[in-house]
Image (cartoon, rainbow, N blue to C red; front, side, top):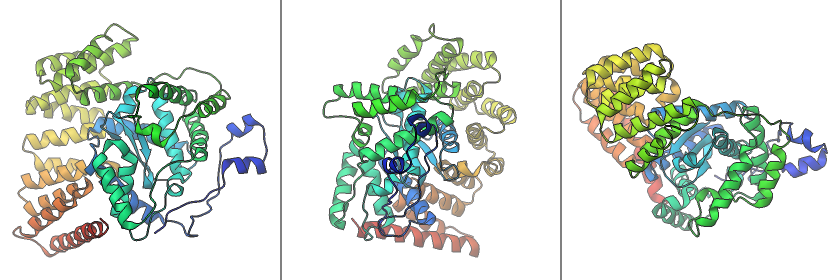
Length: 485
């Protein structure tokens, strides 16, 4: 299967339809779909399968964020941008890679990853949004499929794993080598080096999306300029984002010129951005003392809201250090001062959960679910609290109320496996544990879990048929991957 798309370059469309610069910049660019190099389009079903395989491969190579609050935030900002893009109906999936390297990438099927390291170096929410808008544009303009040639001899699982390794670049040298071997074995050209035209087009389209989503268009050149200036200190260890998205002086100048066409105004950061960034800083800290110093220095700086975020960060540091009394004190004060702020109340409930005060945690989460019925992160923690207090059937009922988007996350299958284990239904438990392993790129373990499920007593015909179908599917995929290595 060749997946290479051709669309009219923006420069050509401007030559055919001349207009003033400002009219061009403030008019949405809509390019025709011209098909791929082989004359046939990749079908939506194929793209969906490719994207899912790509995401599974990522799980086996790097640490994908499993914190529901962070996932909820990155998904919300991503969907806000997509709604203002030129493909609002397209499926997109946003996630955070818990790596300090500065990187962001767009994969097939609308899977867009942002490294925690990149989030932490942003100085404003609009800077993060500018990177995400740029990656969304790579997807909507089909740059990914124009950037590489794929041999039909490579199966989708192998192709997805290879693409993942290339996009991750220096983060996973071992997988990079494995990708090279796969390329040589398949005798294919497989590369992701966006051209200058791709980058310019993604900047233009991305800035339109950024402005339409009520983020600061000037944040794009500002962030890219800071990346360019800081790159001189990296030497040969240049961030992967700069390898795949070269930042030149002319590119910064072009994007700054386009940004100036938009009226200037203030774009304050959302509280959700500040809180997510604080949590990421704590979760990725190799030395918690450094994180403590960071937040302590900000206790007397900035606005009242920013100082509260600093206290929140210190509470997370205490929680990570298992100083539960300190964390309880900090979060209790924050929850009292800001009764309508779900993050502070959720952190207080989570402190009880982590300190194994399960009865208190359950009571707090029960109230939070009623107070914030649309918060999926709180629902997931409530389900965990129900399991910790021996309420598996109630946990199962609550799990079924989650949105379809949350049900696509690996944690959904993981929780179902635990629920059925507590309900003494081993076949179902192994079945859903297999789905969890498969979703996280561990197909061999998935096969083992299905076989364990098949050995369980009391299997009915329906479940036995499901297990047989999933086992055949997992084995076939594993064999395809093995043949192409």
